Length: 468
Image 1 (cartoon, rainbow, N blue to C red):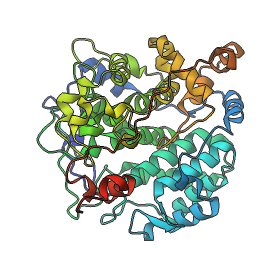
Image 2 (cartoon, rainbow, N blue to C red):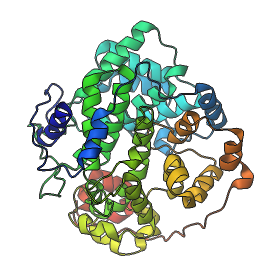
Image 3 (cartoon, rainbow, N blue to C red):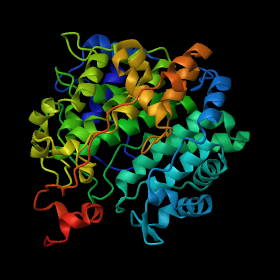
């Protein structure tokens, strides 16, 4: 327990330095952690398993993948424009690319768009490009976080797409013993590195404060931390690396410490006008983490987050309620951390629900989040089943920035039956949800919104009349 708590405490103290920083230890975690001792004890006592497998029944998983292989869609025109040859060449040269984008046919290409394409190809049955990329990186010690690069976010997102996809599909990838060992060793190296901002020459950023301090590095307690934690835990279990496993468990406790007494995740809620968009993905991130922990016999949803008995399942229920009422986010959204020009006051109006131009402000599709939160839906909230069925009817599996089809992993690991298939996937079981009307209206943004080139490219109509 002492070693676990030492790593846990050090997460709050480590600055965002790159690659080789060793884990430092201190004993006192009471100044920041809000988790009950029983919860910390459950996480600390979780053990690595010999011959661990992410997919327990590959025959069921393979059948599901075969049924779904034509449903893994490319989400946008950039991803659709890519090819296996282009993305493999791009990733072979990735450490020489100092910009986060590469122009091809006037489209902006980044590591995460190519990783989405490679992941989709793998889920559709072509795992060779995924294998080639990981083997190349492993054999040549490539894909390292660049201290002065500017695709820091894409770096962690790419790891969070390709490594989970590899974990899910490893039984289908033709690797010899040497290649597998090389990939595992490369994984250990990249995943032990602290989460760090690459765009700061000093490598220093304030850590997040569980109580929401004046300054903090939002990626440290936001979507990047969620994604990196899931990836680290999978990497630890795949490789059997005890040190990485302890770090991943400490990361988990760190994430769980940010839920307040109402179940709101403060690290996601501080994002100004983007608070709802980010917070709506919390159930997916935790669904993936819960599925990984289930393989080592830890029920993540049952863990208590405070001394009053609030569980993670309760917190996930609070996040599913945000689609109807985002007001619990407002007390944190006003901090406007990393809001990309979207002021927190956007959440006080109903416009974000309908305006197509406010996709970053609007929540993620509830159908998609519920579909991948199937473990939670089956055990804790059957009322969400209609969203799972509606997502199935859409006939697309838009995985976006995520590397795992958590729904398929859950069904394969629970050894679902033909009755389950009829209940969850037959056309007769599907329902129609009322479509959200679209209002053609430009978004309201803060004055500095269009100084962000990402925003300006996304909303040219809104920025054409502004001085940049």
